[in-house]
Structure formats: C-alpha cells, structure tokens
Length: 604
Image (cartoon, rainbow, N blue to C red; front, side, top):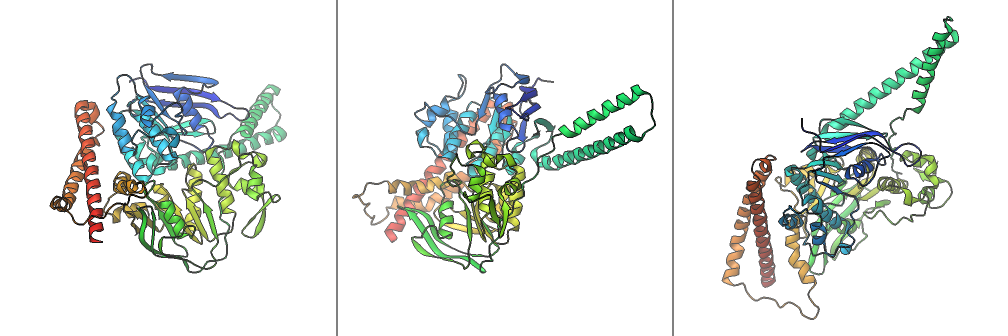
C-alpha cells in the first residue's frame, strides 16, 4: 500500500484552558477527497494550518511526503506586495507548472488578472486565491471555506474543477451540497479529537447521530456503575482490605472519567421575536425597474408576496440581488413602476455586511443596546446571559469584546440581536455565511416555521431547497423570473439550465462600458443596420447553440476523472479546446448583444 501524502497523528494544541486539539489525527492518500467538519471554534482551521506547516503543534507526529507539493487556501488571503492579480496567482506556480493554466482559471473565475489586489471585493479576492492554489495542480489541496463569497455558478464550476483535479483534497465548508458532491471521506473534529468515516458527507449526519447516541448510552452505563460501586462500598459484605482498596481506586477512576468527560456541545435555541400579524398582502410590486447609468439591473419585474411566503433571491455576484431586495422592501425607490407595502409590517433585517459592530463593544452591551441586563423577546423580559446561551455562548463571554469572536461566533451574535427584535417580515441577505452545520439546521427550522414572511438572498442551494416557497432568478439582461419551489425546483423549470455568471457578465459588459463613456460625447443613434449586421443577427443564435453543444461534449469528456491519468496529452488538448470554444461563445454573445442593442435603438 502506498504511503500517505500527509499524516498527522496525536496532534495536541492548547491556548490555555481546555485543549483545542487533544490527540487529533488526519491522513490523506493520493486522490482522496476529505471533508473536515466540526462546530465553529472546534479547531478545524487550526488543524488545516498544522497540515500546511503554518502552525507547530505542541505534541504529535506530522508527516508530509518530501516530494509532495502542498497548496493551502486561507479564509483571508494575503496579497500584499503584488501589483496585479495575475502576479499574485503566478507566484503560486512551480518551475514545471503550466503558466497558461493561470489564464484559464482567471477567465473561468471572472477575473482579467489586471486588477489591483487592493481594489478587490471579498468575492473577487476569494476567486484570485482559488486561482493561485489551483493553478499548479498540487499533490495536496487544503481548502478552508473555498465557497465563501462565491456565487452559485462559480460554486458549481468549482465542484466540476475539483472533480477533475488529480490532487488529494482536504476541505472545510459550511455548504452541505458542495461537501456532498466533492467529498469521498469525512473527518469529524469534535472536542479536540477526530473520528473518520470512509464515506462522503452525505452519510455524515446519520453516522454522527449514531456516535453521539452510543456515547450517551456509555455515559449512562458508567453513571449507573458508579452508583452500584458506591452502594457496595457502603453496604456490601466486608472482604479482604486489599480487594476493597482496589475497588475504591477503580471507583475513583470512574468518577474522574465521568466528571472530566467533555460532552457534545448543545444546540442553539433560535427563536424569532414575533410581532403582531401583518396584513395578508405584504408586498406588491408592479413593473418595477432600476438602472445604473445604461445598465439595467431590474427591468419590468412584478410580484405579489403574501403573508407566510418565503422568497429566495439567487444569481451571480453583481446580478442585482441586493438591489432587488431593497426595491421590494422600500429601502430603494424604483426608476419606474410601483411598490406597495402591506399594513402592520415590522421588518427585521440581516444585511450582507452584517451591520457595523464596534469591535470593542461587549456581547452583552451589543445585544441590549446598552440598556440594562435584559432583552425583550416575544414581549417578555429575558436576561441577556440566558439569551446568549440560546445561541451557544457561555455566561463568562458576556463581558468579552466582539473583536475576540471567531467569524462563526460573530455571525451567531448578530443573528441573536436581529431575532430579538419583534418582526413579521424577516429580510436576510446571505444569512448562512460563517455558520456551522448545527446552527444552519436551526436557522433553517426557524425560517421554515416562521409565522410571518421571509425574503432571503443565499448561495446555499441546500438551505434554499429546505426553506423557500419560491425562487427569483435573473435572466442576465435585467429581467427576473419567479419560480415555484427551491433552487432544485427552479433548475427543473429552467430545463436544467444553470445560472451562468460568465454569460451574464458578457451580456452586461457593453452596457457597463457605455456607462464609462465621457460626458458630453453622447452616442449618435444609428439610422439603419447594414446587410452584414442583419445577417449576423439572424445567424448568431444558431451558431451560439452549436457552440454550447460543442462545449457540452468537451465538458463531458473532461468530466471523466481518469482521463488525466490515462492520457495527459488528451486532457491538455481537451482543456485548450474548451477554452477556445468558450472564448468564441463569449465573443459571439458580445457581438449579438451589441447588434441587438443597435437594432432596438434603430427601431426605437
């Protein structure tokens, strides 16, 4: 049997108090796909950093095969010292790596490579760091939350890219669907120790529940055995003193095991503070439109949202989801059309930026707005510490500054504040970011059972499928369509056609370019189309369909996970052909869009 590429055993690390890692293990063989899962704060990222060599454990064995190349994706990339994204990505290549792969990855991740790192958004920075670790095709890929800040189409592309990768992969993610599709084994980090399941994440939760149930049974048996031994010591028939002392020692050891056993952390107890019932009509939008410059974000969109509806907004980054959300809730006025809000609305909002929080503010002060020691939940006073415990915070954290919280703890804190406010309309923009699986489960139950109305923006396909009653998706030209059901239902109604941010970007590129045209130089309206332009308008749709079909054939060929091992040259040829076909399709889409806009201008 071949030796592992990576092997960690008996890893111990503590930062004072309870050990963070207490005998943890992790091993990766060539080509393995491992999901590393656990609660927020359980030490997953720390274990991954130890595997990458960025942190030294206090005890334990760390083995990395000397010839193996390792690439680590951190949650927050450091791009300091690089003038362009391309320079940052190319710095991750080795001497024998293919530099053309950088262009391929940047193109598929929606970057030109000429961007300055300081100007990148969170999503763009995540795409750039992904390109850097994927470009060299390393032996081991260590990915910490690779889907954070990515839109749905990019997440689905990343799934396909990882499926084709020959690398061994260890990844941390809160995206269930992503883990199910990528992983083939699961390592559970719980209370400092690891347990391994040689099956993908789809089988993890059932297995975890069985492990916890067995643990509870063992603890119950130990407790009853202690009671029996104590009874024997007090009332049993006196035997030889030596034997009694031995049993007394065993009893003390059992007591110690029982006292020091680290029980599984409890679940959050999320509940929204209900307001009075709203009217049956919550929001009615008629033919609303919004543009920035000449770029249409929303075009002639109408919907009627009634009490109890749960609406999900999906789409690529920059498609306009947050703009549409603000239009529907009255925060932003439409250019044309009308939005009517129902009566008795009490709105609680969780925005994408998680609202400004003073990092010096304590948890208790933040939750109460500095007004005493209580919060009002469903009309009743509740001590702030009790409310904190419902969201898995400890009593001693009441005076902890916000700056000391992890990303997941901070997300839970903001949810605790939002949900304490009386509401009958929940507006949630990316509510699942940074939440662990257990907290996601409870947020899902809260949204699904909320008595009022919910409008949410999310890239989490599993969360959408489990919560929303209808899904609103963009068509790429400012128009939006509402579909019954969740994300999977939406795809079925679109005939399996997925959301594609690259095509949306191609469609909006000319409009974005026109916004940047200097003032004082208005574009002169065209008087008529040439014969060549008319012919192109008629023939381009068919040519685009043929290009899509060719791309599908090549993508199916590349989906074969064994192609790279069998014939690296064929894999390289197919990849180059796919790049060329996609570039040709993008060029045709650009040409068609420009001609279509020209035709509308002439006819208008």
